[in-house]
Image 1 (cartoon, rainbow, N blue to C red):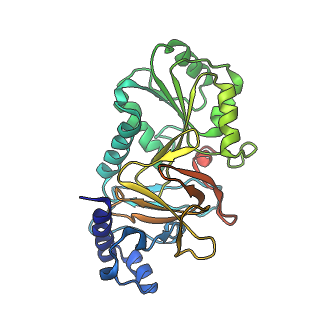
Image 2 (image 1 turned 180 degrees about the vertical axis):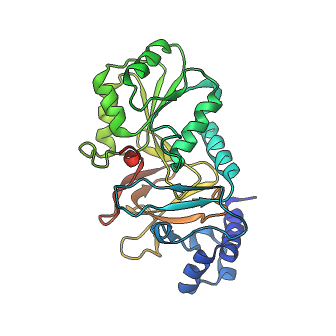
Image 3 (image 1 turned 180 degrees about the horizontal axis):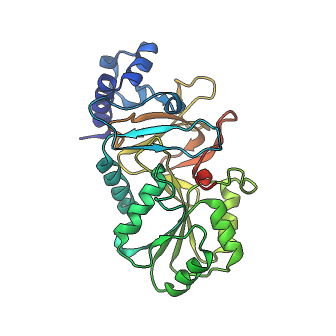
Length: 308
C-alpha cells in the first residue's frame, strides 16, 4: 500500500476516534471525504499535547511519556496506547539506518530509564541497549571514567554513543577520545546548560573533540513514535514518516524550497495523532531535510532538560 493511501486511512481513523483531533478538523471546516492527498490533511499544533489528552479512545494508555522541561513549565504528555508499536517503529528505524543492532555496542550518555521513566527517548535507548546483547552497553551519564574505559577497550568494535549535546561536550573536553569505530549520535542542544550552538558549530566542536568519529543527529520528540536520523546535518526519515514545511504567515499553507515550520507525518503514531505541526523551522530538499531553528515563541524544551 502506498504512503498516501496509508496516510488517508490513518487520517480517517484518527478523525473518527480521536475526539480532540476531530474537533480541531471540524473547527477548520475540513470535510474528510474531500481529502485525497496527505498534504491536505490538517496538522495539529504540537502545543495541544500540553493542554489536551491526544489519543484515540479505544483503550487505556500503556504509558504516558512526558517532555522534559524546567521546574514549573507545563510539559507535553503523550498517551501511548500500544508500546509495541513504538518499539517496532524505533527498532525498524534503527535497522533502516544502521543495520543489525547486535553489530553495535550502545552507550547512552543519558539518564537511565529508572531515573526518567517518563522519557520516550530514554525508553528507546534502554531498549536498544538491551537488544544489542553486548555486556559493554549501558548508560553512563555521570560515570565519565567508566565510559572512557569502555571506549578504550572497544576500539576494535562498532560503538554508537548516544547523548545529549552538553554531556557529549563535557565528556569530550574531559577525555581526548580517539576511537576508529565510533559513531556519535547527538540528540539535542544545550537548553541553558551551556552556550547554545547552531547545529553546524556543534558538529564542528564534536568533530574536534572526537577525532575520527562519525557525527550523527537524531530528530525525535515526545509527541511522536518515529525518529529521523542525519549524517552531519542532512536528516532522512524512515518510509513511514515524512516531513513537510508550512508558511510562516499562514500555518495552513504548505511551502516548498523555502524555510518554514516543520510538519511531520508519523504513521507509526496510529493511536495518537500522526499529523503534527511542530515549533521547529526547517528546509526540505529532494532527499533530506534540515533543521535550522525554532519559532521565537517556542518553549525551551528537549532531552537536555532530563537531568536536573
